[in-house]
Image (cartoon, rainbow, N blue to C red; front, side, top):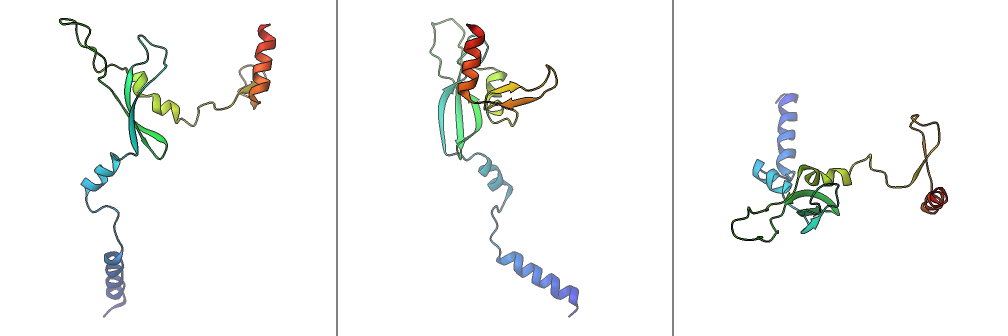
Length: 135
């Protein structure tokens, strides 16, 4: 038996003994739609009428999916149904929430305006400076 044949045979036996995470494309697809919990939530965005209901799906503490929730009551017979209510800004909310560019701490300009230089400050310092500027 040649060396190439032995290597191929060893590779096949190693692959057959290794458990596969997914056995088919259906398993990969199903894995995409698994989450820990789901609930109805709203977004406080700058739009009218605002606070549209969304069904939010969470996996490992991170929002992974949102969809418009049809929870609005019927106003009266003959008036168009508002369900499901929500816009694209609301549907993109989880991307904004998980964005690496999201500001998580107060920042103070460190250079001239437009330079893009910032320094992180404490919440107490930020609130004090804002209050001093207003008063």
